[in-house]
Image: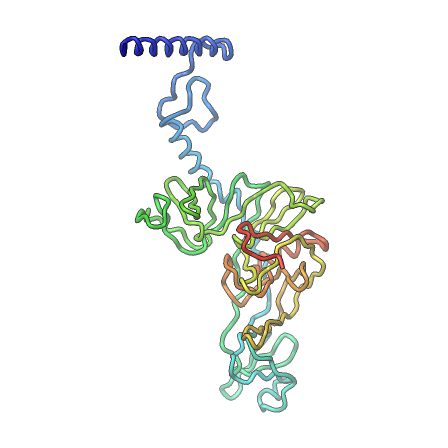
Length: 377
């Protein structure tokens, strides 16, 4: 009985093969399916004389990824070096020392009557010159007033990170490495599978494959090289405008990834890292529009009782879009890719100037959180 069943199975398989061959001849004009391609790399398209499967398919896929990585400098171009230039230098003000502002250099030297006093809390001012007298340093502020060097605890450093211009919407997810990190050869946080390949902070990467382990994503960024989701900040390119955007021109702020993408005529033109509001002073999701642009302005806010009051002088390239939430440059931290602001969207100096130049009044600003964790009110 078993022999009969085996013979019947072989007969059915043979008939199926013959039927398939006949069908292939009718549909494709060939007597039999093409043979598998020999192991090798076939980057010029699917070959017509063989089937691209097995080792050939694997080798071709690896070579394709390597070619895409090699072409990244051509496809992701940093914005021009002329953006972000400023003649301002910033001073961090001591928390405890007197914060007196004097109307003249003589008044500052003599310690006479001050014209004003900076409020308590986190504060920066900008200065245009400095003078040493009697072994003490005095700073002339941008408005012509003066401050004593004893009130200064450090310098602000305008962030010079540069986002990238793209020619048309990229075909896949891309982003930046947030800190120096070694890639892993196998996805999985507890796998001791380091590759000895260190990606430096702010290296641009593309996501070629995604593997979900538990509730977390791992991203293949090169052949046999994986990164954990918290180690990168990503942009998800799209050509579909958010609901409500009718002119195919918008700025997209991703709160979960801490990135910004700029779209014009329905195509992505620019992308970069940002810092948005903390969990307590979050940037509100929604669809907004730019209603005020200021080339430079001061910003103050927070709560003295909660010890988060801030007073920041001469913040450049400011664009308000949701009440007093704005896109603007920052010089007081280096947290791009992480949440820490009081609700505004902080940009590097070059990125802020580029976006300020690109944007018009009324341009749409779409704020969203794909994780759904940021409240809308």
